[in-house]
Image 1 (tube, one colour):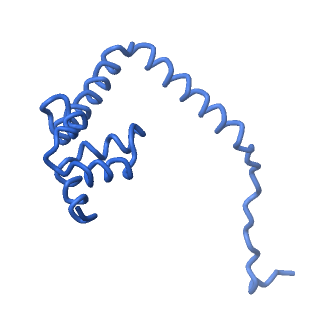
Image 2: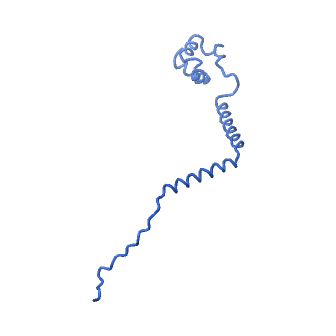
Image 3: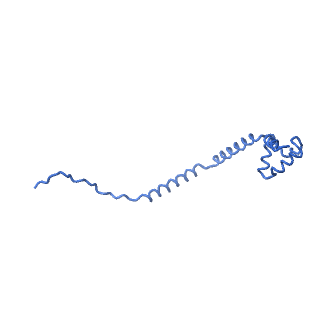
Length: 121
């Protein structure tokens, strides 16, 4: 049994990756089992997925569950409370803007004196 054969076996049985990532076993142990028993042994039954769902189906179900949780969160919101919260934040921002602005002084407008004007005596 070669390492390349083991890699191909792992690619066929992607659930083995989950066992290693979850810390239930390590690659060395799995390779030793592969080397001793081969691909077709019943030793691999305990590492098989218990239900018939594939990884892509499980991923889709998890993403759908997340979306359902998000919708339930939105359904549980009291819109009046959200509106009051937004209004209070808006008022606080306006107050900070007013504090940050300094009163502007009105400077007299400068009108330049005509340079070539002759004064009469």
